[in-house]
Length: 208
Image (cartoon, rainbow, N blue to C red):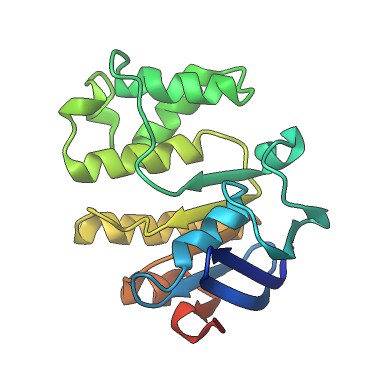
């Protein structure tokens, strides 16, 4: 379970959110909704260990979130922004390297499977900078899917995906839940939220 208790984050005199508490069970998805600037991304970064709370706690399977912990890193895959790619590696080679870095012993097979899953099989030999914006988003998601995970943290994963891509994404995230993964995502797409989320948290209602 992901457990968020009395979470507070400030930047100087600006309080982004104050005293937020909620849980997300294994095999379920929580969508964080609300307007731009409501603090959704900041909370996701705290959940993924890329930022820290000023007060309160975030724990995953009873361990406090700690990005420096190998155990935590092995449990969490995130897409928070446009991740960097290796400019001289093909799309397939990029995924193979990410998979190998996270302990895959059959990196080529893992990368090949994910290329098919994210709809990039025909682009496997291309360099990342030759991809369309939608393909780049699929590559970012693929980079999360090639690694072990018990929780996915996604910031507006539907960005730059067309209608077919959003339908694909919804089906992928439903399968992630069925496999027991926790999914936490911020999204403005009502269709995606309705298709995937078991619970929603409204950032516009957070105390500040």
